[in-house]
Image (cartoon, rainbow, N blue to C red; front, side, top):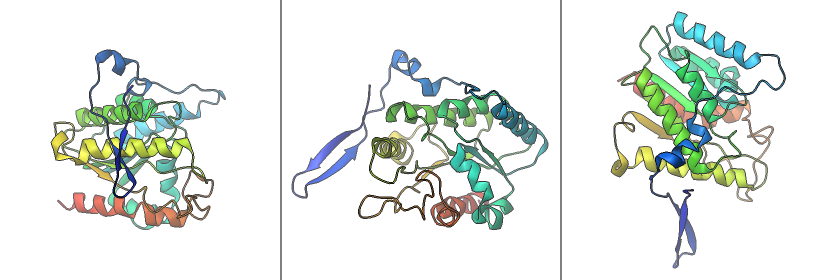
Length: 252
């Protein structure tokens, strides 16, 4: 199992995170649940997930968007914010967020109709991974890369924006560390020219996870009301770089 490793700067006593090499065997890859497209279990039995998926498939076929947001509840709730209503929505966007979605669920949705557009999509914003709490950082990272590949296969030459995973929990916890490791892998893959390949072209990682954790290592409820989801004002601040990047890309 691959994981990030650390180097200690002896003079400054600082621990620096370095990504592990991106080397996988076919066997380890197929054992990764994040790269296997899967619908979630309908544990309640109300078929809400299926209903949302079908609605998104219909919107993909009948709408004329330029931008698509896809991911979990953090993407889903963005459409109810001041930032969305006053700025993002004017960019001709669709929001395909579903609360609770895991990486493999979004992968399934991309492959099963939600990206069958009849118009040219210029940019996709993809944010998912925080709900894969039973997976390693590298499994989540590899699953996100698989979604990027699937989107590129559906929409050649599209720009893909990857906001980094947000920290979670009022106090330090292993899931914060896991999300931070995922971010390290994403930045190394897509922002390091040494790793450039056909899958990294037109992919932009936007660091939105910084400046959320306070000096005492806690997260304020004024930023994350439930220590997972952002408040309206926090969305305006934290997702502003995503909006600015979209504007830049759409003007090209």
